[in-house]
Length: 135
Image 1 (cartoon, rainbow, N blue to C red):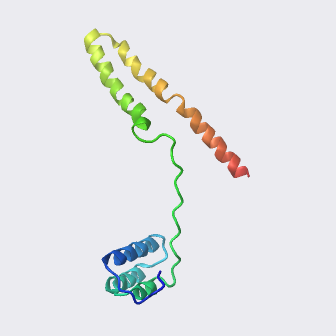
Image 2 (image 1 turned 120 degrees about the vertical axis):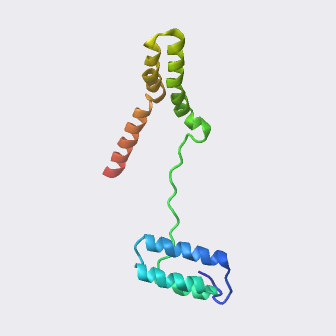
Image 3 (image 1 turned 135 degrees about the horizontal axis):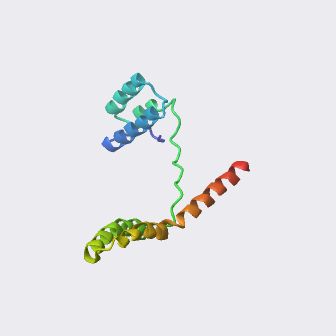
């Protein structure tokens, strides 16, 4: 954890150590009794050496794998959902204004227009995964 084990630690270091300990517990590396025992040591720790002793037999944390970023981000990614939420309301208003039920056909029509091309993207992703599995 550190080069100089006798440097005093503060609350932030204890909280980070408790978080690491909780992560190890969640991963199944510690039993409840071990977690309680080591938590007490972390809470009473005064130096970095005290904290190092708690993690001696546990692996170092691995950097989290990055989630692939979506191409669509922010407000523009949500506009089809926002528009689709408004379409039924508009259809009801137009129904009462014109007394024609045909406006309700706009709901599935707009769904097909807004989301029709998403099915193909999902199929392409599945094909890509299958190709990766074969390699």
